[in-house]
Image 1 (tube, rainbow over the protein chains, first blue to last red):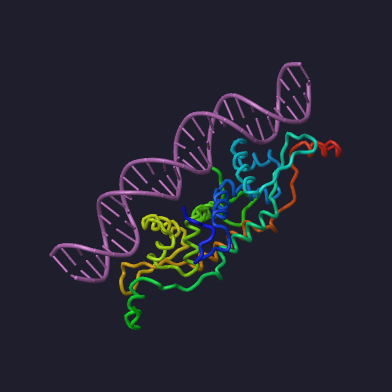
Image 2: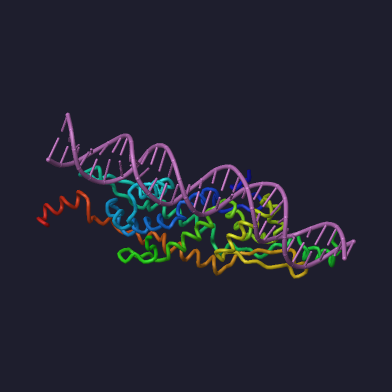
Length: 130
Length: 130
DNA sequence: AATATAGTTCAACATAAGTTGAATTATATA
DNA sequence: TATATAATTCAACTTATGTTGAACTATATT
């Protein structure tokens, strides 16, 4: 097994397994569509079903995935607890943006390191390096 | 089929299918590890193999996926074209950050819209709305 | 010209995940 | 108490994808 967390030579600013797990949940068109609706204030499950035109169990499945990474919260209706409202967890969204931005930050890009290959061999020859 | 691109009632700031496709490529621990090395200047394929301890065909497979979304460029060695150098496409990385930030922007979060459910019915009753 | 090397492509496999329909749970209403 | 409703859970299916080993391509070296 590879150690994704701490590559001593090239440490990552975030845990790559955790980031991959979260991105995997987000990497689904219908889940992005659900997120878009939740962000837009469409949080009643009945209206989600209307807007998405998807089977209720499928919506439930995708919402479960989103809840699994903490991005979505659930709340039952105060009058009739059969109804459920979903909402975006603001803190989780902030953290997601922070992690994504930290890892994919363009400022992190370093120039090419030449430690092997023919170019290095040639330079070594010129310098007389072993 | 659902129309992910333009939901007239709740338009998304980016194309959700395109975003999902890109996130899908990123949502893989080993590919994140490869990206991390490329960002850190480790671009010679020989050194990638050493650092990742993965089979060369598997590295090639993952790099192919990353190239597919334009995030990684390829360049052959000037002296010995058998060697290949991979690098992060800065413009693609910028665009990725822009798209991600636009869609997952916390400032987009709207308050709950109540257009259905028991709470709405109660309010309608109090107001005498049909 | 023959051999070695860097890297990719191909085919087969195993696993994971989205989709579907039926069954189940929990709450509210008649 | 029995029925209806909102939502979830379950099981089966299909598809997609990471992994592996072998075959292949292209370039460089002897």
